[in-house]
Amino acid sequence: MINWKRVYDAPAEDDGYRVLVDRLWPRGIKKCDLACDEWCKTLAPSTELRKAFHSGTLDFAAFTEQYRAELAGQREDGKRLAALAKTQNLTLLYAAKNSAQNHAQVLAAWLGDMVNT
Image 1 (tube, rainbow, N blue to C red):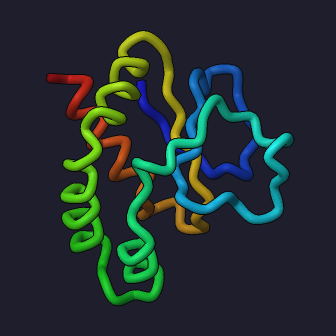
Image 2 (cartoon, one colour; image 1 turned 135 degrees about the vertical axis):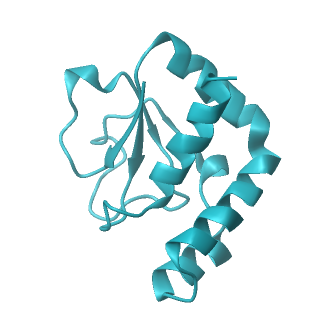
């Protein structure tokens, strides 16, 4: 199972393997205080794409399409996390305020496609 949650939310026992999927370290959290198993910057959106989405230049549909195109170049890291998701829960951690539309959701769906193939 692949889940996503804000990095500021408390860890839960059923989170399983916790991966920070932001390119930048989240504000206000010391590295020694974050309960995560790895920081996977390679699967985060590019700086240009992130800025375009947060500024409103791109809507979520366009962001999703462009982000999936970026992810296509990171299949090896994706396969590694998808393999983990087959054996245990995988929780993708993100810092964005918008919990309804964010890159962790897109990444979870992309990884889910790999798990199911």
